[in-house]
Length: 305
Image (cartoon, rainbow, N blue to C red; front, side, top):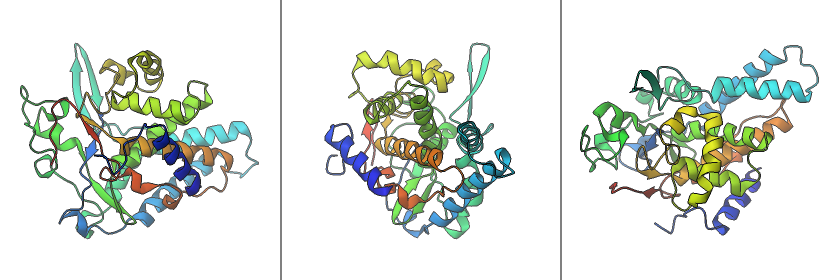
């Protein structure tokens, strides 16, 4: 399956849609550079795989305790159960905002991110939480009036906007990539199953829409806004195009889009073999989830070290 993922990545490059390493939400961004602090991180591949496979096992037991043959309906129930346990968001993990008389919580972690953060031990160098002031974005002011983006309005929102970092094999990634893998990968899969998306180019375009990539023609925005609203109505209230990047943090993350596509591939394979499929990070091009390997695009005057 890893070869399939690489072919998909190469196809995206051929389409001119992803920036590669030779060129240089309200979702979290990250700072996944090799620094003195991050170099101390140990490989937690085994722990991440163990967690995801335990959720897969629990989801199978929940929907098919008698280990009956996997029908189409049973498989669909299993995927929904797993997504509920991993891809759904964790209440209380985000930022509270008010829109008129309506109180909302945005930028919530997925349950996968939330539970992995609890399981990984910072004292053993399994995960690194980075303060905004220590991140590559610290040149940008944090101020209610002068902050350039919603993520930079308070110290709390600024710190929340920087995802903790972990090491998978030789690659540093923000834990937000696990969230994108699980949540947006699930959105991609559902959208294709329901006939809203068709093929890798349309999945990429949806990712560009969520991140706010100006390479996506304006004429395409309305279509993807309607799809976005199916999965995240608060995202469309927040402005739709660019809610996961350009409008919230000023960062259009191609690493996020790679993680989205990897997650889609995971759900495709899981649907083919619901009873036995094992999650293995080696099946995916994790190195492309790193924002140094897949450089982000910065907009709106955002500065980065």
